[in-house]
Amino acid sequence: MCGIVGYIGREKKAEKVVIEGLYRLEYRGYDSAGLAYVEDNKIKVVRAKGAVSGLDKKSSNIQPQDLAIGHTRWATHGKPSEENAHPHESFKGELAIVHNGIIENYKHLKELLMDEGYIFNSETDTEVLANWIEHTKLKRDLNLVDAVHEALKFVHGAYAICVVEPSAEMIVCAKKSSPLAVGIGDDSFIIGSDATPIIGRAKEVIYLEDNQIAIVTRDKLQVKDIDNRDTGFFPEKLLLDLQAVEKKGFESFMMKEIHEQPETIADCLRGRLAAAGPEIALGGIEDVMPRLLRAKKITIVSCGTSWHSALIGKYLIESLTRIPVEVDYASEYRYRKPIISNDDVVVGITQSGETADTKAALEMAKGKGALILGVVNVVGSSIARLSNAGIYTHSGTEIGVASTKAFTGQVAAITMLAIKLSHRLGHIDDEKLMDLKDALAIIPDQVQEILDDSAAIESVASIYANYDDFLYLGRGINFPVALEGALKLKEISYIHAEGYPAGEMKHGPIALIDESCPSVFVMPHDDSYEKTVSNLQEIRARSGKVIAVTDKEDKNLTEAADAVIIIPKTEPELTPLLTTIPLQIFSHKIARIRNKDVDKPRNLAKSVTVE
Image 1: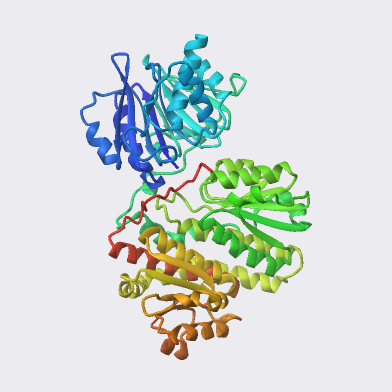
Image 2: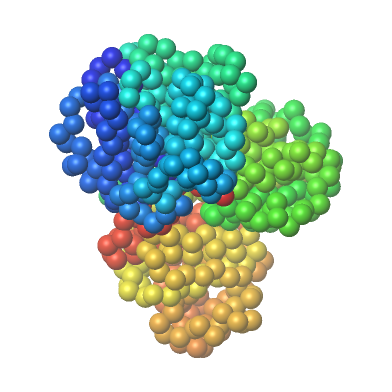
């Protein structure tokens, strides 16, 4: 959720690198920002509530530095304020720290420290951690590395931290259940909570594992394990480039990413549909295919937008394979005492691969013997490493907080998985498989058709931009698309929007219907089309406005709806990959008309790395 950036090197530009990195991390969501450096053997801290630009202005007179750490904060403990912003300096000035995560036993540690005379200047758990490391260092006469190592033995919770001391010789980093990467430059090291700040400044990167500590000096990187043993490290090539974090002429990252979907869906499908014969090639799951095929139950755990792709997965897998599928909010899964056996498969869907609730749910399921599959975008992420097998979505860096291309990548991946399992289990024959493969192959072109007509969709959105309540309705596999459409609108425009199964509308939500509450129907011509038309007529009979997203001209629908958005025709199983695109464009346009920051919606974080 929060963002960490650190720099140490021979060139005196640390403060500039850190500020630039914090700008790149704004997409993760934040409410304050700060910077720490060393001058005259003293730690200096600059903090600002609000945007990184405010910190940038306050830092403009800093003399060039060769070491600095910085942070963007998303409030958990304590309100957004300059006092609660990171970095936090310890009480006696021995160190400063930036921290992502939550220290669960901070109150106990704080009480122990107060008994030792420590005074606190913020409401945060992070300041407690800074003082706890300092207390350990002074009481046991330890160097900074050993102090961090020993102090963390008594800390419960999640953390990614960077710690500096007045000697300015090193940055000490540690990780548990919150991501942290170290980029290896020619004459420097750049640290980030993800790779975004590292792009363009390093060609190689390492991703710390849980319970590892990295000691980063100007000339050397050393990695130790929880027992303080040198583990070595294995750098990976950093494949991202600067274009991934630039708008390339679009008015927002979200619109750029909406328009990237023909390419990103094609990247997800690439090589997987081209296998010889009728097969779909998913090399990441072949080794566990026997367990998949004998699964008695599949559970999909996820959060937010990924939960909607999980629901689509449920419809697909159950209808195509006849294997029972449960979909759980990852945040609820562990606490309902789920029944898990060795015959179960648990799938985690997550863009970042770091979502704390999803990771915790998968860890629990793995501990009980379930086969763990990950559907993940970020290569090398925690959930990718935790999984027994999985599918990368290859959607690329997604900067906009409201997910677009990552969602369609997840849907494409779970669709291929369902089709492959169905064919292997004998529920669809070679001919049906080829029909689905052929239809999947042209989905990127069909998405481009919708994007080419985005002006017409935006025209519809302009008519409804001043309404404050919306219902989104769909049936079958497009009910989750209705949920996703409602979520996109509320995320970026702050309009109240709800998604419902169209058949459920008369069981309560119809009470909301009047001329001030438009309804968006997701209704391709499938087996439930006629029933959905009947639901639409019930809305019209109560003076409700209707916007319909469908895949074929229909005179009756055109006469009944106030606006009709036409998408290309595809196989019924694949319609979510198309029906979701107009809803993204619709939400973006309304949010822009209402002058909202679509890339950084209030209160939201891109990667939710705390529970």
